[in-house]
Length: 185
Image (tube, rainbow, N blue to C red; front, side, top):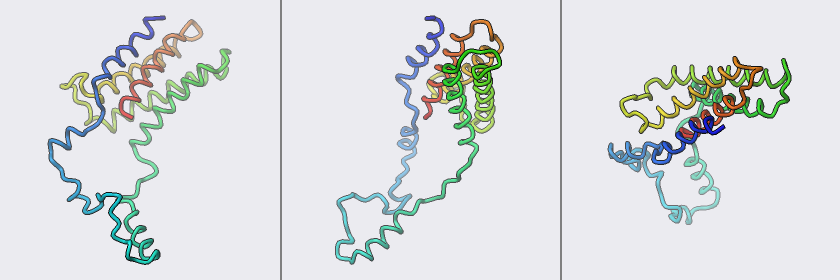
């Protein structure tokens, strides 16, 4: 059983010093967001509308509250994200489903594998430029790709191995995929 937990434990150890943000990039480029977005960055204590009537304050606040852009309800990145989350959800439900031949356990296992394949395929398609193998495991995108791909391959192996014992491979794959998703979320 310990060998099935080895990959997630290694991933957690590698994940400890890695930060999945780009604050270093903005510090290097020296982008001044105050000039980029105008005077949107103000202290909360500053209230230049105290002399105005409540209606005038309300109109001014409603103009400032408008978003800079309208977020689309469906994007390629959201498709990739929801396929990965769906794969983890199906794997969790597979664990809970009764183990019957041609039952919910088998259907949910196949669903988890199929959603995982879709997540890996859309990830490679839409995030190919994010992968930089020259950085090795210092890049969280590389670890994300490795763990989620291994998780999906484990799901496929567990589905192909059934009805022989396959729970350890399925559980380790789900943990690896969950850690990989958590790294970039």
